[in-house]
Length: 439
Figure 1: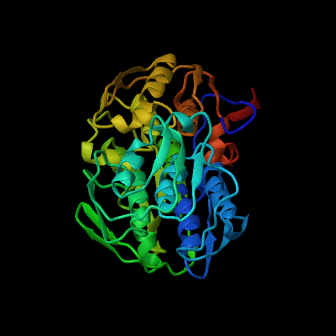
Figure 2: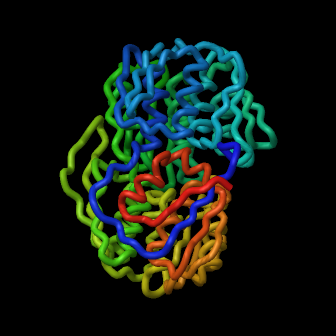
């Protein structure tokens, strides 16, 4: 838990989503703006920064390593870069809370430093698998002690890293990014091949800061020994946060909502592609590019949805959006089948099982499988569900209330603050009947 006490959402049925809203900044890009801005030469001005607990954990870690960072204030952060070799040894362990992105990316970056460091997290993070980053880092020459493959991670100093050629056993942007960051400190070239495309924010930002990255089809390469030059970064609104409102509008009659300035990076638009396959009415406008990242306004109007077999090539492009998509499937006519999504079982919670259990409580026929789920659409009832401290599950069940037969009570919602600090306020403004109480 990232908070001393529990938060409970009580959501009444009915309502519809309308108007124009801008959800918080993209979490992935907010993390990387601090990491790469700190290692750059010069001052990086960031706007649209997500002031959630995960991104703030990254910010605090770099402050602890001697980087002067002003803000955040109204999404604005100023990072005074120290260059590739300017970080200082932290005086104590670096605590990153619930943030898987922070611990995995930092482990690669810290493996290349000449000081020792230890990365720790909260109870939930301390159960998550880290061998997927520590194993390939060991191949590069890093020495990292863990608790049987889980945090805390103790990273030894002074090991000279060497570039490797590595094929990722599973599609993971966090592992790819970790190895690219380590590759900047390695001798020679680091080449990573992925089994399916994953988000490429690290490659885009490295390129935007003048560090050469070679991308060929499913392979990305980086040479050690380069440098980063500071730049201004405008963080787009997070498509993962916009997803809850997209699904809410898609399932509730009379809804018509526009989400402003949302990042539509091609590696992140699985949610749009899958909802459209289900029959959702989605249009994009005001498309532009900011800091190498494409953005657009996304308008979603209610339309009846149909169950589908979700194409496996879309799975990595929507990996964080599935809890919300499962709610859409529960409201669709017919059966929705997801396969190839075993990665969901090792997120902040086992998202497949947690969603299946919650949907069953609400009267939906949902069966978890080893690598996915089968949902037979119908009506959503009422009941009390547990989000297991997983922010995306909490917000997904909140949106389910738009089609529910009665009140939905959602327990363990404090971690919503990690990615979407003003969710209740924005959801209420858009038309959701939601109250937050202390448990």
